[in-house]
Structure formats: C-alpha cells, structure tokens
Image (cartoon, rainbow, N blue to C red; front, side, top):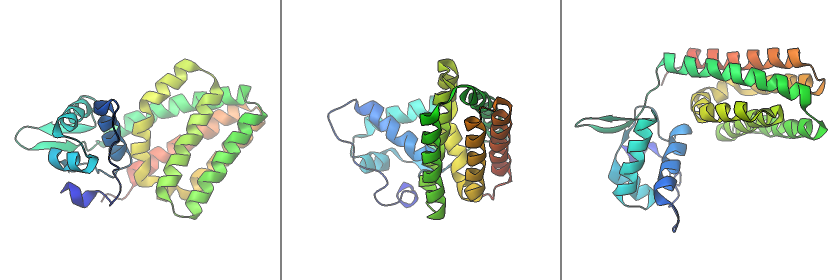
Length: 225
C-alpha cells in the first residue's frame, strides 16, 4: 500500500493558487527520484490525492505524463506502478552520463576560476559532512549539486542542457548506492577538484570518467531489496 511506503511528513500539502497540475507532477517525480516511492510500488490515485491534498484529477494527469516519460507503468486492470528500471536501461543512461560529465570536467579544468574552485570545495565539504552523519538524502543532494557545479563551470550551454535531461535519472540510480559509495565518492571528488585547480584537462577527464564508472559498476553490483 502507498501509505506504508511513504514516511510520515514526506509529502507536504500543495499550496494554492498555482499551476496545480505541474506541481503535482513535480511532487510525484521528486518522490520517485528520491525513492520515497519505490520501483514497483503500486500508486493509488485516491491515496496520492489525499497525501497531496488535491483531487484525483491532477494526480491522474500527472501519472499519465509520468507514464509517457517512463517513470510510471500503467497496467490495464491493475493501475499505476513506479517503473522498475532494467539493468540495461540503467547501464545505457549511466554510460551517457560518463560521456557528458567527462567532457564537462575537461572544460571546467580549462576555464574554472578561483571562485569556481572554492564553490566545488564548499560542496565537497557539504557532502563529506553528510556521509559522516549517515545522511543519505543529504549526500545524494550534495552529489547532484557538485556535479551540477562542474557542469556550470564547463560553460557549455548545450552540454548543460543534455546533462539536465539525464540528471533526475542519475539521482534515481545513485540513491540506492549512495551509502555504499560513501566516503570514496567524495575522495574522488577531491581528486577532481585538484585536477581542475591545476588546469589539468586530461587529468580531470580521467578522474571524472573513473568516478562515474565506479558509480555505474556499484549500481550493477548493489544488493537487491
């Protein structure tokens, strides 16, 4: 049941006025991305509507959109379920992520200034604190911020746009392995910062490629629930 799968207080009531359809969609997508709604979980319109404090209509519309985008499966006579990604789906997306982020790391090393490096160091410290506190959600959020900052420092709008298209699915796949990656992930981030600081384009590319490959392998080797 949905009520068993959501921690108390995980879903705030949506305030009005506003584009309710879009806000319901964003709320559900965030719950899926963070795995508050887990892959394979049955999604009951009336329960979701109750959690969000809305009618069933915007929930139904959001589920249809999420189905179109591959986040939700609509099964005849059964209802809606959070999509369970196959190993091939994950592998393809994480491989594309490696290509995008390795190029972003190279460009960041070529052009990052002192303030950009400082921002990366601050985000790295934030992630390290989250790991020490065993704050998985905090570590996942800091990881996303760190990689987004590298992409920003790359200064390539097309590259950033492409990365944004895969960002949420990267978070979806990273969440179940965040604790396992733990401290090592942030050691690799420190190595990347050092390469960017030195203006070492080749080194930054190599570090980022190895870093994202470690995450891909860890995902495939993870313990299944």
